[in-house]
Length: 508
Ligand SMILES: Cc1cc2nc3c(=O)[nH]c(=O)nc-3n(C[C@H](O)[C@H](O)[C@H](O)COP(=O)(O)OP(=O)(O)OC[C@H]3O[C@@H](n4cnc5c(N)ncnc54)[C@H](O)[C@@H]3O)c2cc1C
Ligand code: SF4
Image (cartoon, rainbow, N blue to C red; front, side, top):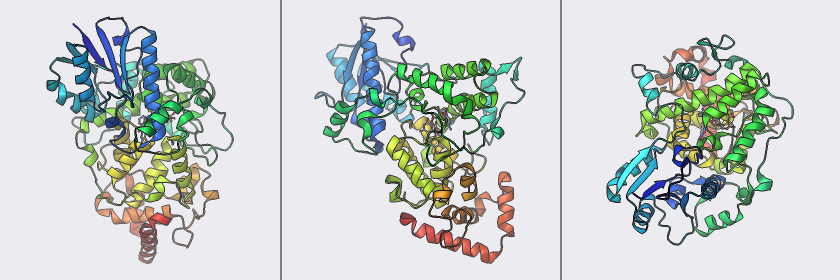
């Protein structure tokens, strides 16, 4: 029986059981297609990173003597659709069975289910053997609850995998050391590995341009810094454990005008394309704690991101699809300002965070949440537009992880399923966690003066205009009571200032 097995661009798991044995009757199929580059406008580094990681993976399979058909973006016979390319290969090679690993995206899951009957052969799907929880675990755990709390899920996972657990209790006595992890950074962190000197993506970049694929972002794509295979990913992981993990906790929420990475791992692309497994990353971090290389708070904080947030977010995605992307709790409908595509705004925090995203296809969590996401929510931008922007710009953006983070956590568009209150702040928080404000055109202390920071008036204006939806939220007690007590004239002046900024959003 001849088998055809499809490998998607985010299924680069060389330790998958598929590859344990050589099978002459089995052919692996990989393809670079326009359908997958064009569903939103993508950053060029993301397109190049995925295709080059796929090319590197297919080389690895060939070296292990597996049979592989690789359809490049500029191959003449490429029909740029999964279905058409698969049908052609099934015919050309007289295949009896088609197999695929369960995709992580609802769109592809549906596509594969829908075209199965047109293939004319037996179809099977298997697990991708990557995640630590099944798709429906979160839904199952929270089926009778209004709010789905990550912390509850995280504790369940800690126990299930016995991570930082001793005798069924959390090592150190606490489950979560987040409260210790909120320091501002001042200094020069060590550099991590940059793969630029060893990468040359010129040929691929030329092919992408020749095929007229739409993209945006800095075209440093010919040699960018992201790892594109398992060995590079393992090197990056090792370096992170060696130089950064010990500081990860303390400075997890910090932002710095000069240092855009600080102590973040840069591992999301390797994880999301499955070049690394979450368990091996978690185990390495836990080992570092037991070998006294990093403190408990840092290790726990890092592990929580992967064992907790990453798995939980995926569970939320599968429980809410299809239709999650249509949520718009606040009925926000503004367009994204043009400067989201250039970084040209006088607001230093946004200009730095967006410019670095355009240059590197990366921003760390707090920049995504408390700078860009925060502003987008305060300004009333349509959450679907924001979702598409995030999905296109970040190197690690795959819908299963990007959509709940953007729409749920950052934009509160699901009305509080995922976040207990909207993640918004005035300039005080940004100034506390970063040094952006000291170099800004705006004054972070001012609410209504000519150079008042826009975050301040927009913050109060947001709560004022959404009182109907937020006044009863128990986590917003302080904000709501401050708003109630606010002098009417002051409120008017703040709302006037906020509207001035909103009316001139393209030039602030
Ligand atoms: C609005 C918004 C959009 C986001 N979009 C994405 C996305 O498209 N893809 C993505 O992988 N992450 C996304 N995140 C989560 C997080 O910002 C990134 O995982 C992280 O910045 C990646 O950089 P890093 O590898 O250096 O992470 P580190 O800070 O070093 O964290 C380690 C790992 O933890 C995991 N992680 C941390 N936070 C989260 C989270 N909230 N959800 C899921 N995994 C998490 C990631 O795998 C990450 O690699 C988003 C967050 C927000 C607020
Ligand atoms: S003053 Fe306001 S706009 Fe400027 S960096 Fe600070 S928070 Fe951002």
